[in-house]
Image (tube, rainbow, N blue to C red):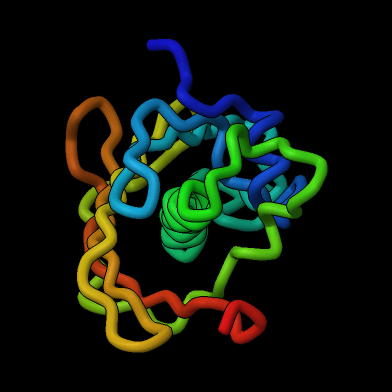
Length: 161
């Protein structure tokens, strides 16, 4: 499937850089509402050196981070659409300045380990908002099997107000 956003476009949207960028491409996007992204999990990921040395498992907190980064892409593209900017790589606007903050993680369940060679499919759905805080339903899949699910709350950046 051809990406909606490729790795270079994602790097222009998010402030995260290697080794803390956990989103390789976006395959479905409804700006401001929902999206699906891909994280290819490789054996060369730095975190596998210590988690765990004899059994490589992607840490759950990094699965949450990957889902939060996908959420940021959905949110930022929605904000850019509101100001009628065509293309996330516009030199006039820094898209990463719209990335907010992860506020809380709720009811997170990890159903299967994620290991080298897996392709994480990251589904996010932005729900209701109250003030600066938005509720987001998040789910990660490997081979169409749910591996993690829960919800997060994210906030807008204070500078946006």
